[in-house]
Image 1 (cartoon, rainbow, N blue to C red):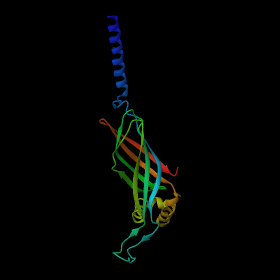
Image 2: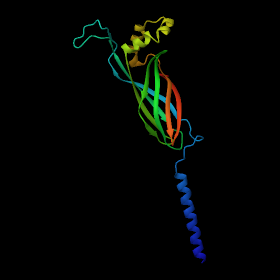
Image 3: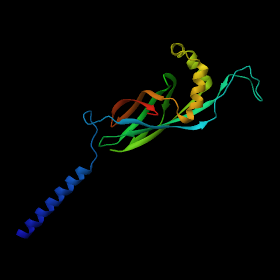
Length: 199
């Protein structure tokens, strides 16, 4: 009888320990109180496509096709680290920011990518942004006109400086008005971020 009691006691201890271990291994449940802000930081910026600096007006006769106002493209890729400090996975479900060359806003970028970031881990997201001298010129002539006047800068000087200096990042590129949307089990957080490259 005593032996049976010892066996039952040992079994009870084993079952309790197994249940505790199982509970310890379960992921935390997201709540308003334990939903910590994910952290968005800019790792670096790359230029995967570059053709130099040029601009053609519609007065220039093309070799083929029709004349128009065309400018050199410039592709940039913004690589961000997304850190999840929570004890459960969170979903990135929206990502946008504006790009400034020096003090001039030249583009607004959105990423449609959705991803899950595991608990306590860091993912990367790569966001491409396309620019061209024609569109950037229009931005400088309209929203940026007053700022150009204050700085006594020509829009053509600004374009040439940015397009020729881009491969070496000889001017600051600012990420501004960043907003990342995170979700976890019905909860939603919008995290603001900004950055400068090179720092």
